[in-house]
Length: 99
Image 1: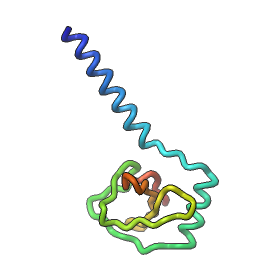
Image 2 (image 1 turned 60 degrees about the vertical axis):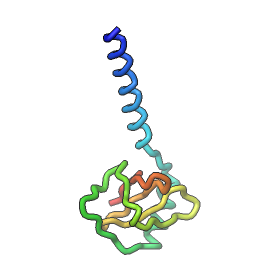
Image 3 (image 1 turned 90 degrees about the vertical axis):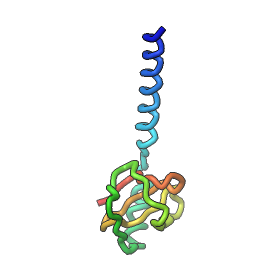
Image 4 (image 1 turned 180 degrees about the horizontal axis):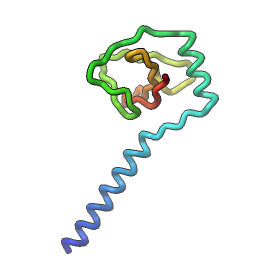
């Protein structure tokens, strides 16, 4: 019985890991990416500095960081340490980092 329980626990952990990884894979269509890039270029924002925050996909930004809207796009953007990042406003997690 212990072996069955271990196998079931391993399966659950595997599914949780796969679900978490899939949740971070946001696909932005090329047309939408072009709209975002052009809008951000036209509406540059001042860069904010966030000590101790790594700009990686999946990193959540603090509530103190103001996010800016891109018309007709579900994501928001902000410039952090000179780099534009696209953020899911619901989770505040970074979905794309522009260089």
